[in-house]
Image 1: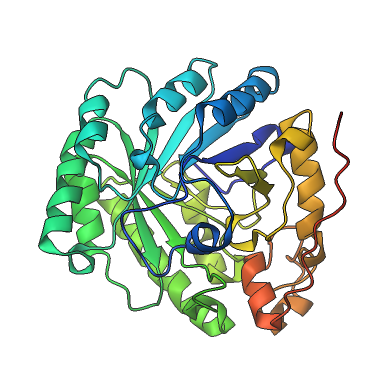
Image 2 (image 1 turned 180 degrees about the vertical axis):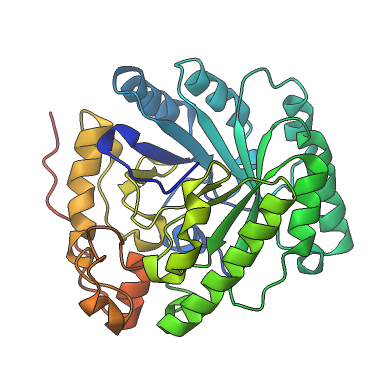
Length: 338
């Protein structure tokens, strides 16, 4: 593990197989998608087969199965198996609130999946919900699992996450909370000094995790200024991953509509079936986000020599909210193939 620098060969997709969830977290970046997108509740077999047909010809570095909550889909693990049989790694991001049908099917899982379970800490759940997620941790013991920790402020607690990760043999996946159109700007992107405070917390977490034999990785992108130069050596070793620039990926919804990143999903968006390959689709929709690539969230970004070359300058949605600009992201004309 290290500081990640991606190329188009690393292209991944997030396959959103549901547009519904059983958790109801107010801060989730999928809320805008679930509320605003005119999307079917579950991906149909027909739409999955269209995705799979393209995948068979145009291999990806990884397919991450998401939602909503993907475990609610009755074919979730079946979809994952077909993807895995192509030799493509499968990720599965879940809240851990599995129903009895999914738990039963999971017991017969016969292919590798990289699970990511976002955990809010015991205080974030009712006793019933906490019992559910602990039961999921027990089932996941022995599998490839990352325990998700969302950092919303520099005062967040994390000891319980380390205890659980150590107990069950999980990695720790941490991320700085990103804003959505519904929640508005989050603490870490209101000012650079607040982001740096969260960055210092992240470093404490990484150091303590490594002392306990827990590997870590930073999901999403971390602005370069969040990490002090004296601490960057932590991400030049084998235990920890970080990325300062947005990696090559895009989201595919239940109805095969696509966008560059979920919080920026516009109301009108192209379909995967408009393209002959994943790379063609990525190159086209990546242009939608391009107006934001030369900007940073903070005014300090304007004088930073890392912007664009090393750092994305923060999430595009934070830049959009900061400008209160709903017109900047526009869909480019798509020529539909006959």
